[in-house]
Amino acid sequence: MKIYRLRVFYKKEGISRFISHLSFCKIIERSLRRLDIPMRFSNGFTPNPKISYCPPLPIPIVGTNEFFELEVKDIFDLNLFIEKINQILPEGTEIKNCFWVEKKAPLSSIYGIYFIPINEKIFREDIEKEGKIIEEKDKFIKAIFKMEKFNHKNVFKYGLFDGIKRELFITDE
Image (cartoon, rainbow, N blue to C red; front, side, top):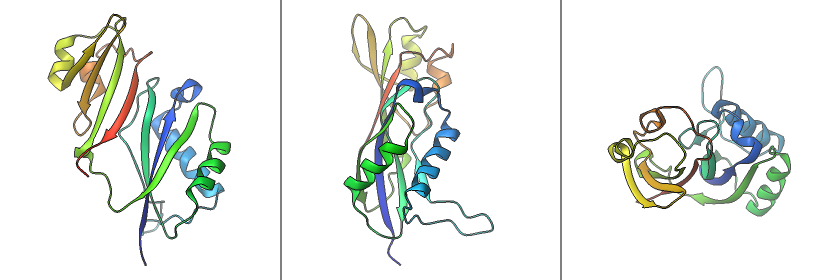
């Protein structure tokens, strides 16, 4: 049986940014089941859908370009899929784009660009240890981090995430 892999890009903002990662994973799974998507499942006593999620997004960081990958049994109409799933998902979550891919995106190829308001209690040294500042303006710092070993607690030590935005992208494919 041929395996088809779908990479789905979405944004999570507004009220949805307060949904935890595990709850969000359950929402996605239930939405896919509701649409009767021909998902592939793991083997074993309790089979689960084969879905890979991007690195978790802490509450209440806004995700403008998050993604998950889904293994399915058959190809289906992607435009219809986007239209139908956006009707089901909670307010503030929207599927932006999706396409078929040959292989899974390795964690080593995922980077995140963070837009951090200056009013956050952060230290530039902590950002430089984990990543790189690529732009600094009056109201925000724009920094890039490799998501493979990134830990939000190392950069945002005070746990104040409000106003921060993350945009993921994949390289080396």
